[in-house]
Length: 151
Image (cartoon, rainbow, N blue to C red; front, top):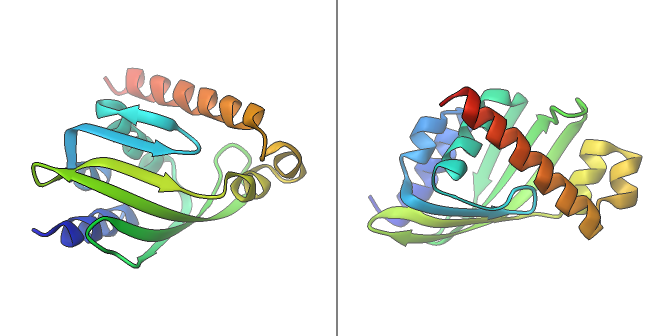
């Protein structure tokens, strides 16, 4: 399978909320980075997708512009913390090793996401390093709780 085919299959699995298929494309030493989680590795990165797919509410995903090292994807869902509707636009980049995704970096506008997810509060503080640190602390706590529950 080519890198472009792997990335396409990754997002097709994500569209279907099939976390196990998604992570089958990940190297055991995967490194994932995005504004909400920061950088996480290995099983934490894999469990993040399991957690997100299991908890997704009113979820839809579209992907485009797939190359051997990048993709654009857009997710629409109700944010579980507030129930508010989010439309997140993400640019992803990939590094491969041994035929698997070794590094996966998602980039999106955290301020826009925070405004949608938290309303006026997100608009006011969603562009601050304080918010980003607090969000990453919360996502890590949720991920640790999920991992412990599913160990």
